[in-house]
Amino acid sequence: MSEAPIDGSVLVVNAGSSSLKYQVLHPATEEVIADGLAEQIGESTSRIKHWYRGHEVVLEGPLADHDAAIAAVLELFAADGVDVADSGLAAVGHRVVHGGRSFFEPTLIDDAVRSEIERICPLAPLHNPANLVGIDAVTALLPAVPAVAIFDTAFFHDLPAAASTYALDAAVADEYAVRRYGFHGTSHEYVSRKVAEVLGRDLTELNQIVLHLGNGASMSAVAGGKPIDTTMGMTPLEGLVMGTRTGDIDAGVVFQLARVAGMSIDDIDTLFNKRSGLKGMCGENDFRAVLQRVEAGDESAKLAYEVYLHRLRRYIGAYMIELGRVDAIVFTAGVGENAAQVRADSLAGLAGYGIEIDADRNAIRSPDPRVISTADSKVTVLVVPTNEELAIARQAMEVVGQTP
Ligand code: ADP
Image 1 (cartoon, rainbow, N blue to C red):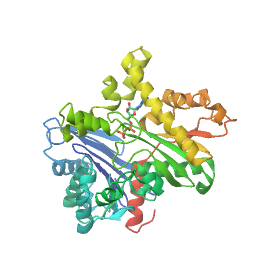
Image 2: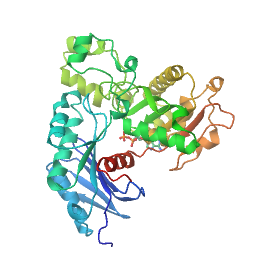
Image 3: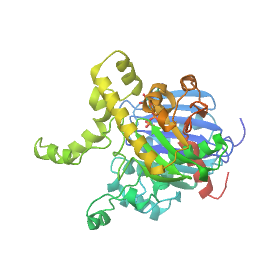
Image 4: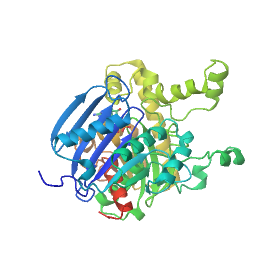
């Protein structure tokens, strides 16, 4: 083992309310050195799956909180002879979901930045508090390593006003920072840039529709590298149908459930974010299970799949009009990268608009970026695996002044 096995690398941290995903990687060489996930933090059934240079260990046993989880992860590194606090780690990059109106670029975390992230927590109560717990836990154990916050909203900061403004009383919107922020920005930015690379074209010349279809799902219209619209709004609830989230829904449903069903605001928040979407409609939020049930003729899964596709196609149509000319349609994230059926169904019957998928190319499974449209298709359709960790590591490195 080398003397400084993680020298010059970045620790990327994505903290959820009961989970902590991490990766150690070199932004320049793209080498992943370690990768892991701590789950069910705060319960008796916590476990950590930790991978370091080709070998994996699973640690089971209670982790009281995120501090305990990070401490356990550092011990796993120590077991492989790596003292993370003293091995030349260049930076920690923290994924922070909501940057509100304050943050629109990667930001070195100091006390003032930490307080501001805390102040905007009400905008993203399901996400930012967990991100902050992650920041505090890592900072406590690695106080000497610069920490950088990378915001999911940043890429969409300059959305045109027509796309970012809700048709709401302007004074109320302004007072409570109610606007459309957009999320998954790190992924939309990474993927749209990668498309230019793959096609050997200048990013500024390309009009793209990017479909980030994971458990959470969002779509963006990107003109010359700049987003002009996106499906998520003030929170990551708006837009596409997701694993457990409604996506677009008439706000009147909230009034109905509160007045008639007597549900509290918190009940409705949980219903819309955790018990809806595919899971709400057919009981499954894992897309593979939904597709298997569709195949087996299950009616509720079929309807859920149709609602999912209907929403996707509605936005594809909208973004074609907004962009005027579309050069590329790109699929990414768990469903977008793996589910050939979803790609085929979402673009079926669009040959009249110059969009044609090649069935053989679409069926190929590969971890590499690839074109899946026919040679004659006017619009190039691609699958581009996202890599948010790499994008976060690169941005963190730029902030600490060591451009990779
Ligand atoms: P997130 O990061 O939002 O949690 P991912 O991008 O990891 O989500 O995507 C998870 C989703 O991808 C799950 O719904 C999973 O079922 C789906 N998925 C993964 N592999 C496949 C596959 N081969 N076919 C269909 N769906 C898949």
